[in-house]
Amino acid sequence: MKISKIKPEKQESATIHENIFQVSKKMGYAKSIVIVDEKNKPVGIITVRDIVTRVLAKGKDPKATLVKDVMTTPVFCVSEDDQIEKIVIEMLEKDYLTVPVVDKKGKYKGILTLRQIMLHRKKTKNNLTKSHK
Image (tube, rainbow, N blue to C red; front, top):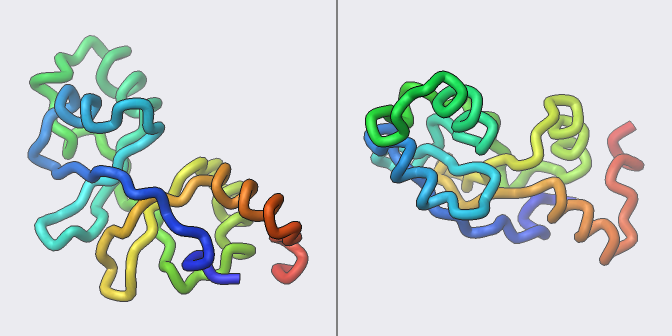
């Protein structure tokens, strides 16, 4: 089954020129935010863990620290045409809870969460790893 069957959550993105304080406000209660370039293509990602370990724990000022200095890059993205079964395995192996979804041109569409996939599986009673063997 393709990822396009599960609608990615629409989520704000940020740019490398923003500071951590601005990005934190955009994130709200989200666990991560995707960093995009001027063409809306993902270039990085920042998680709550990144903010805590790379900014706050090091005593850096969130208003003076730029996204580009603490984001995780390169970012692992998935395509709307990717198979869910394959992506679940990769997410589990890499310990990712969220992954950005891109269209055929590589433009950011939204975020896919492991929770979304599991809820979809429960709803459709679909064994996600059966066809990946």
